[in-house]
Amino acid sequence: MTDGVTIGQAAAFADVTVKAIRHYHKHGLMDEPRRDGSGYRRYGSADLLRLIQIRTLAAAGVPLAEIRAILDADPDRFAAALVDVERRLTERIDDLIARRDMLRRLTTGDRALLPDRVLVKLDRVAADLGFTPDDVMMAREGLVLIRALVPEGFDDYVAKVERALDDPHYLSLVKRMWHAAEWEPDDPRVDELATAMADHFFAHPELLPIPAGLRARTDAAIRYSLLSHHGQEQKPAWTRLAALFEARMRAAGIDIA
Image (cartoon, rainbow, N blue to C red):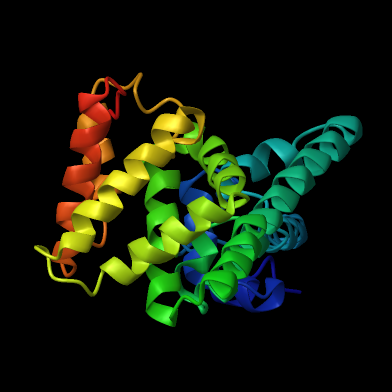
């Protein structure tokens, strides 16, 4: 009867690799077995059992760094340790599921970057205003930027816009603003629209769509500029409209940012 088996045989019997066994030895998961007269390791039944236990725990998701302590623990500590490992695995599973769901949502573009409730509202308003797909995308991008640059004020901003859009007069101003994207910058209608928008917010300053918390930031001007000028690169009329509107608001003593 042979006195133990070679590392290759032990690996085959325990369904692991020779490299894995050497790794277990290196990191102290199992003690080195005795060596025969030729200097080769000889693995007995206890060693094989240990290899099977290590392999099983590792396959179940237990970190290798924790396996020795778990195997050497008394039954109560062993059970408690496995419960803790299960909890951590569950958290990882939840995280992976969330990531998978995000990947699926990303197939719809930047819709994944906004809450569903906001997307539903935006789709409804876009339909009412007759937005083109490009208009909807630009509006969605603007909301994404607001959520990123002023996260604490995002819900407040959405609520303000919702209240403002309940006013038919403001709704008509929004429609004119989107049409203005196709105007020439020196079109007299740009000046007329800037005046009309300023007059509306003079009367309703509480609805001025500036996210709560923006003014308190030391870099408020930079963040406001990034938000307010989004989409203007290809729409010169909007650039002039924004400048005229902001000038009128500041001249009236209303702080923009």
